[in-house]
Length: 126
Image (cartoon, rainbow, N blue to C red; front, side, top):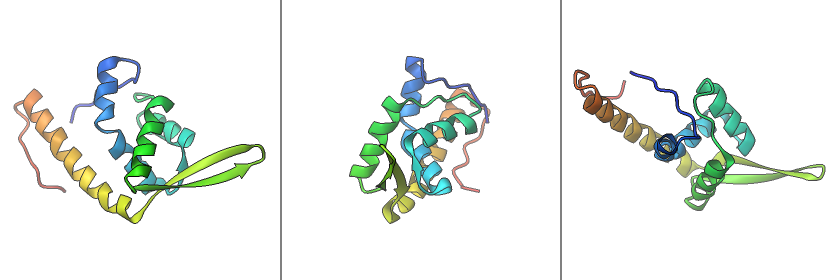
């Protein structure tokens, strides 16, 4: 599969990220358990090898939507004068995670086939 650098400073790449941000957050919370916002941005940066720089202006609206949809829950922790909000998946979030993964995988295979027609379509998950 081809890998293209993605920086969340260009309009087109931020539009691409919008469609996958929920899946990325679900994946990170599934793997990392509870995480706070800055921790999520740093994990995305680390795992993408600095190709995706997730901004707070994108992350927090996505987290709030996941919270409203019942896919994540939040725990507020007071650290001295600071307040840190930890997000973690709910049972519904864990169930939705796999559906999001399958949908994204199929979509990426379709796009890859459209852009690189020699790539066969294979919708069977490994």
